[in-house]
Length: 434
Image (cartoon, rainbow, N blue to C red; front, top):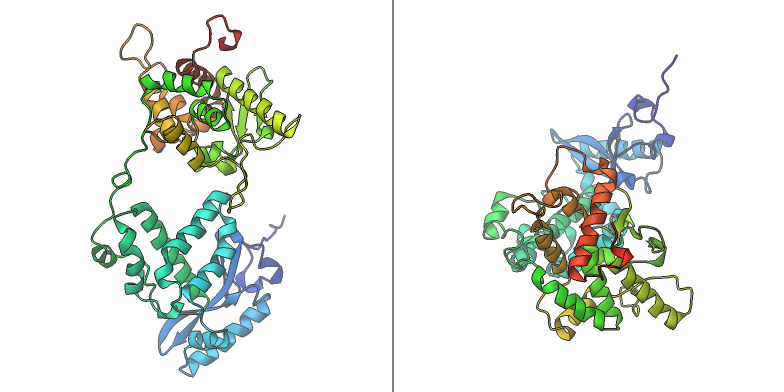
């Protein structure tokens, strides 16, 4: 029986045009030219090795859009090697053949148009674009072949100590964009944004650790949660219901605000909310995440639906927390709206994200009846209620996702207990039955 050859197992010299888009991420030879596949297969480019003045260098020949066949790539390679034999740097020749060298801003926009759509969700895509546009203004109009380390430092120094996490992300993104410019033969030489010990020293040392500059999100102490939830229940407004609901959901606002009616199963024996995996900051288990709804939370969502049906008519289908569309095209309640309502209307010195800390402080302080040392809830289940990938975001030797959708039965108990603590239902209410 003969083994069927795939694009990956073929002799590089025998690969053909059909293999160009069949090969996975990595570098793959074609009997001379090399196909570099990046970004999960969305970015495919040709390169080759040439000898220039006794030195072996890499020349970027072009993308598969520019050189769509193996023959075209080999022709470009032959031309580059011919130039090198004459002592001419083929990288400079290719650059001169192209349009005028772009500025950093022009190339950044072109790169992001190709790369950003491959990111996981819309929020990450927008964050990538905005971080580059907002923080790289000092180099935006400089030609990419003129960029030096001093230009990179001009971008990083104002934010290195102030917003260190963002500064690190911006540096990495500048490095990738400039590397892409070199790949397209717009510049030669070292990448000025590449991380080095010398750069660290020029920036005044390592950036502060996460949390040292901004600090933790202010939270409501668990002792004060019942009173706050009672006050929110008295308010017949969307913002109040949203704050009440997000506090009981234990999830982040980016996962909560886009809640849609199609994600809810409020009439099931155990009401649930299924959050699409694309909305998570960190994908909890590479699947949609099912949230068991406590009776109080299900009641609040039904009340919100009734409110929307009085405005839009029944049955209502759409975002559960709608808002007027903003400049970014979002049509749901914003973090800022909820934060202002919490701080200004309710007079609470805390953040919406801080509700997650309120929950965790409460959960970790629960012990089995009659003991003062045995935790009431499994520490994994406490974390999974917040859709953390592993306890405290640390690695685990065991696969937590084999635990029945992140310990779903245990989460039902915790979510109900948390809701009963925050907003107790009458003892004879059947909805609190386990």
